[in-house]
Length: 234
Image (cartoon, rainbow, N blue to C red; front, side):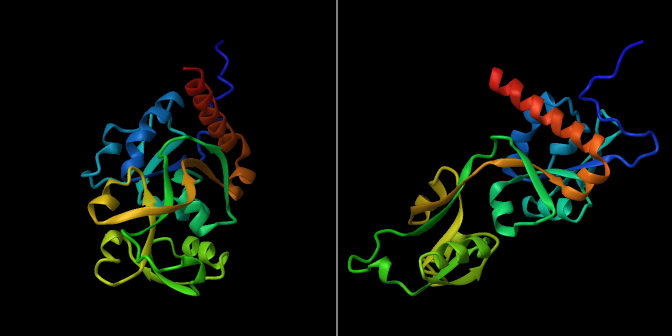
């Protein structure tokens, strides 16, 4: 008789499948090879962002995949709607959910949370003397914490996109946003002046699910860890 692989999740036949939340957008294309190495094969249209489907079966009846907005991955996992997920460290920094455990850095989706402002800066301006500054960002918590550490009050203009327009239209003095190549900043007359934090994507886990379904959740963590080890050995 064939013995089950030690990496095969031990899930009773009548147990609900584990839900893996994946982010829409730029990270999704990088997730595919990681899933392949972990032996996870979702339905073929899971990466088709024109598809109206949001939940997809996989080759393993013990696992389903859902595709949601990057910021929502952490929310789904924190509230237990999904037991595991993949999201950027920027999301974890912004929301800091106590319910989330992030055991693995997957090394994909590399970028950074940075400050950018118009160039050139006014020659007589001394940023060390700022007491407050207006910041356009979708990361209000990250921005406020960063400037508070310098004794600067950040007045947040909360935007979900087109941050690069804010300085030129007088909406904010600078922006805090994700930067990958910097080409969008350059095209809009901005320059990256400081990196707040580097960002990669993490495997995240709901802490309660890990306690109540340790075998199943632990086995999925092991599969992703093995996938990382395989990548390192290439």
